[in-house]
Length: 86
Length: 175
Image 1 (cartoon, helix red, strand yellow):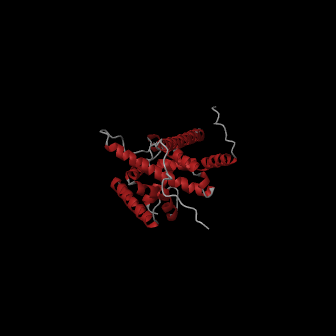
Image 2: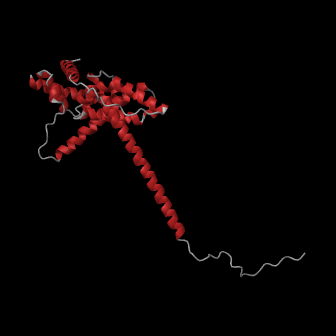
Image 3: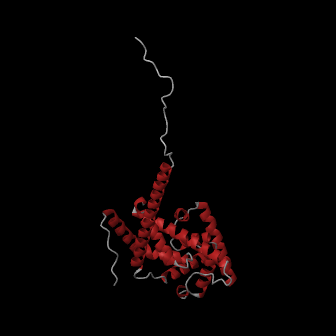
């Protein structure tokens, strides 16, 4: 270790010694975690609700687009099948 | 004294709260000091954010022992991002504020030569500063520094030697 490295270690240690955490740091930080977590869950819940509501509305709209008159699938006008004779 | 927020009833939540309180007690001071030495202008917020990230990822944490390394790495990353953000913001301000982020109160405890060294350290690129602080303040091994910074061992060597060369130059210029 050269002189600069030794001086650097001493300077960093001296600077670090001058740093004192606030006595209520945990209380403040914990309050902030809980607040942000509540907010995150609220945003997530709102987002899920909006997506669900949109999906429901789109589904209802698509169902509403079907023709109101009865759709003919089989008219029954073609040649009728005759029962095979034994 | 203002009471704490009501404690959760869920056992997993209680375990997380207790684990975090223990982590806070064990490592908060050293993480705060690390953020200051790395040049963060708001070290309390940086460390609080690092703890919030570990709070969210608590269930995915391998063990509590891994938490210290995770916190250290997060503080390094957040400080680097914060400094980069400030550098970009300063480019758009007509009268930029003083570059150094070390508070006058903390710096007042230093001798003149130490203050010159710390000023020179603050002028280094953030990667070089991180490598030097992790090596010479925390005394980490090369592999631990590489893990904390998310780079290879070779890059750690490069950043450390370049940073030291710049500091040597600054100290030589002063003498």
